[in-house]
Image 1 (cartoon, rainbow, N blue to C red):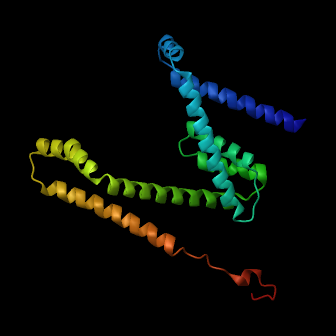
Image 2 (image 1 turned 90 degrees about the vertical axis):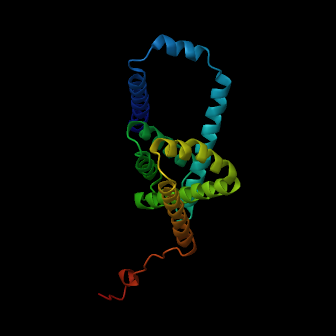
Length: 211
């Protein structure tokens, strides 16, 4: 009975929190204008976007579940999915709080240690950053001519016209950006090729009484 009360209590609190956040967002807005926009919206695209978002979140939960499984812990996909969605809800209240929240919620639901979950979240972030840098690199290489023309037309030419300066500051800034990008790529490639091994202190588990 107590578990059921707690469960429904959490649902009610979540709904009240959602209503509060909705009120904060719409406070001071033209409600009639919002109603007209909602009535004229094409909800087929909204439903499609929601389905794509749910699929994306579920696949992310499955990836997290696989990372947890590599450490010998077992969590159900629905548990990780609920934890991911709880993290997104926490981000609405406090930005970037979702990573901690989803680890705490999954730790309580599955009994997995919080430290292990935090390590998998860190691994996720490193992989996401490496993937983003790889996509940026591929985009620059494949669309170099377009990007060069776009950057020159939108950024470099207006900057030169406004500052009435020569090309030297622009070249220095561009070279600094390229150098920083290359250093980041080399750093992550080195990390991926030579992962650091955690030290193993055999004396801590030695039953012969080393100490």
